[in-house]
Amino acid sequence: MNYETIYQANKEEKLFGRYITLKHIEDLIFKYPYQVIGKSVLGKPIYKLEFGTGKTKIFMWSQMHGNESTTTKALFDFINFLHSNTTESNTILNNFTFCLLPMLNPDGAELYTRENANKVDLNRDAQNLSQPESVLLREVFNDFKPDFCYNLHDQRTIFGAGETGKPATVSFLAPAYNDEREINEVRSKAIEVIVAMNETLQQFIPNQVGRFDDSFNINCIGDTFQSMNVPTILFEAGHFQGDYDREFSRKFIFIALLSGIKYINENDIVLNKIQKYLHIPQNKVVFYDFVYKNVKINYDNLEKSINFAAQYKEVLSEGKILFEAYIVQIDDLEKHFGHIEFDAKNKLYHDNVKNIPIIGQKADFYLEKSIRFVNGLMI
Image 1 (cartoon, one colour):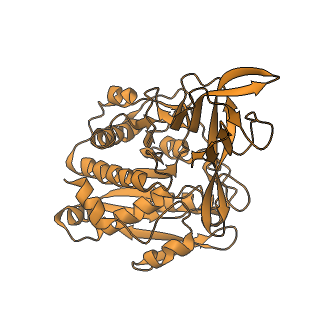
Image 2 (cartoon, rainbow, N blue to C red; image 1 turned 90 degrees about the vertical axis):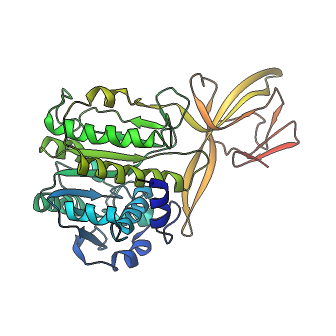
Image 3 (cartoon, rainbow, N blue to C red; image 1 turned 30 degrees about the horizontal axis):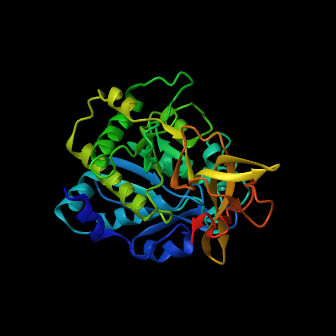
């Protein structure tokens, strides 16, 4: 299967960038039979789509966190594939039934926040079920009775795939179902699908797939569903070189979705892939967006060389996401990397504040008063 060709043929061109709201996807939803399963805190509809007639049932939901939109884009790419009327798509529709909630948290999507309108993290509400969105998710889960659950998310740019110096462009987790983080038959099924997806992704992004920490938290949706004996997989779309719009990451999520479903369709689950799963490097917080090395500063009339790092904050402004870089760390950068790194070669730092980097300050500065950096980037 040529995943690259299939992706390019089915990419949903109407969706782009990081800010994806209900108004961006409703026309795409209306192309198909749909159901409004309820409403968000602020009264926005929450839609359900179902496709396929097969016996294996897969439940997917995206944008549980409103500011995590990459998997929503990939989900519509996947929907386009399912309706591409090819041998591959028709086989999958005959063998699977998909239940999809493309946007569980439309209020958070509009506000570009992780939480819903009540400032509750829906991924910590699996037991309390205090929010209407959480209740709807559980009701669909109970009614659909899935064989697999796919919990679709984004992760921050700070994560690397272990200590390889490579970003975690895609990460997975087969959530724990108990405090001891034991691996039973249910969790093993999720692990086996993750291993298959990882093996495919290594062809495209070698050493850039991570494994999320599996500390048990019954308040999390994935841990809850795993404990309810349904194999559950957490997907995390991460950073790819220079890809702050997450268009490359989107492609790799699509490839993961398709390759994992292909594996389930073509293979018996044999529950012997635990070591391969554990071999996927665990995510580590090892990245900053910018790292500046060997920067000379004049501090109390003494010259010294330092390193410092800057990180983007994502700011919603007039319907667009702006990336604003702020200084977040000075020195203590051992075993850390920058998605963009700059060696100042001992040039003198200068800015319009105190002529030394200050944590929390915007990353606007000069080197030798001639090399200018604006919003973290040299211009």
